[in-house]
Image 1 (cartoon, rainbow, N blue to C red):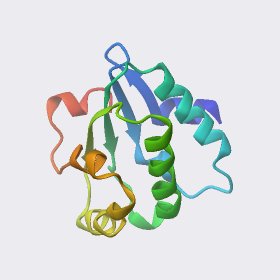
Image 2 (image 1 turned 90 degrees about the vertical axis):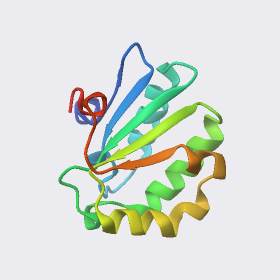
Image 3 (image 1 turned 180 degrees about the horizontal axis):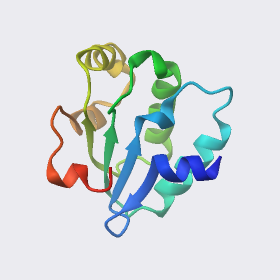
Image 4 (image 1 turned 90 degrees about the horizontal axis):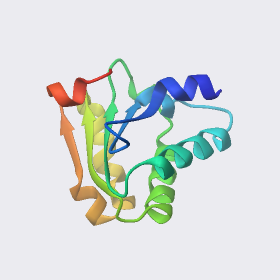
Length: 128
């Protein structure tokens, strides 16, 4: 499992950037190991950090939106005020619509830090 997670979420730029591929949010039988792993990665990050979430080649039916919603709430509770910015890259119109229906579960301050990008910038493409 850890080898799979190592490819899907990792630190970069002296731990100020966390890169995430959306495959990490695919439906699974259990999420316990994933939660421990992600919390461990964030614990190693700098006091504030940026997250780049790449949704390339991901279809909404692959993702477990209930888990994502609960996971975001959990991370907000464990790591308040550490997120600088979250860039969601290659997001389909359907994913944006789903996000709009789920954003009520996201803290307003966190919501302001989320930015959707259809075309990745050079910085956001690094290592993808």
